[in-house]
Amino acid sequence: MAQDIEFANRLFYNYPQYKEASLAKRRFRHSDIVPLIEKLGKDGKFVVKTAGKSAGGRDVYLIKIGDGKSKIFLWSQMHGDESTATMALFDIFNFFSSNDSFNDIREKILSNTSIYFMPMVNPDGAEIFQRRNLFEIDINRDAILQQTPEAQILKNTFDEIKAEFGFNLHDQSILNSAGHNFKPATLSFLAPAMNYEKSIDSIRSKSIKLIGSVSNIMTNFIPGHIAKYPDDFEPRAFGDNFQKWGTSTILIESGGWENDPEKQFIRKLNFVALMSAIYSIAEKSYLNEPLETYDKIPFNEKDIMNLIIRNLRYKKNGIDYTLDIGITRTEENTGNCDGFYYKSTTEDIGDLSVYFGYEDIDLNGFEVSPGKTFPKIFNSFGELEKLNFIDLYKEGFTNVILSSKDKIADYCTLPINIIKTIDPADFEGIKVGLVPNLVIKKNDEVKFIVLNGFLFDLTNKTGEIKNGLITD
Image (tube, rainbow, N blue to C red):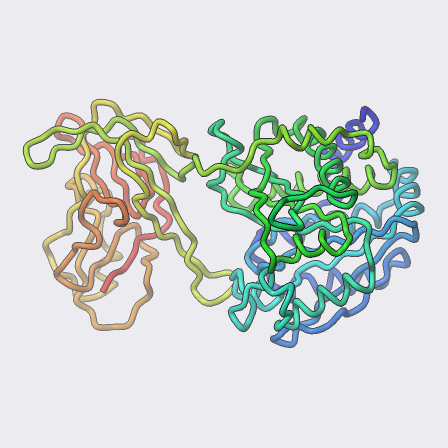
């Protein structure tokens, strides 16, 4: 175990030299990784082949390195918008391509294991950064029928390799917590069940031991941020079936980390976790890990929101209330890999003491009210661009009315909401399910506004409103 931890520490601190610089953001396309894969094909260490084509005709690649007895199969981005591990796989390729102080470990790994990688199983989904494939089918619910070409490719590759270990690499919500400890579940592991009874045989027990070993290692870097993914059996999923079909399978879900929207730190953690697992397989050190280690990992919980504002005074119908307001955000795609905007929702109101926010602010003594709509009707977007938004906020306005009949998007690049009708009901009010547009005062002076779920401090001019929304 000490040797495994030493190796992980060395990887962690030497990581920058292996990071694939061309993949700097989590939204990237199939065309971004093809040159990197073609370059690997020219490296004598790797064997690269096309395993098949996606529904949209894009190549799905299989990359192999090593000639050892233990076969390991890693596949990523089965869901097109879950790209963290894909970035880490290219970091791993760079590690194996390098010539440095890790050479003795590389030789040991590659003489004891044969490692197969399938990055970006769902390239069509990645093209528009959506979960499902071109046919709107969730590939990870197609393990049995195999109606999608991507599922057929994955299953055929599985049958061909007959791997001892499989790594099913995904992203999960950044709002999952590691148990009830108010910390994001940055990495969640699972030894998938192979039946409804969640039986443990010799195949699954190896998954459990390996997860226990890797989670112990990763705790050194992110204590309290490791969880266990829900273990209910899903008979249509690849991980559950691969476990049932004889491959010790490990699910890794990449969650959230504060101030890491592009998941670059979590990518680094994936690199270290996966390399640690591969090394442990080569050394067979995971066999010394007791099954109980896995049992002690807390399950994912849903105790986190993007923003919680606490202890606000709210007056309605002549009655004073004290409220916490919890806000969550989603990324709404605009039809291509790069394009998206944020849409926020008032998730909960009341006593939110059992929740934690990435942004968590106590405004005890402040009074909250709904944002207002500016009474003037504007005739063009150009008029809106000339507005002084700070002045509007100070008067409690978070919305404006635009009479233009021009077709415009669902979101506004300006820090204001646009209403194209006279009825502002979607944007005014403090109610679960509504877009949170709030005015927060102290001594009758506006100190903060919340616009589309983003908090802006008018005193210090801090905070960023990523975008407003537009409603018809």
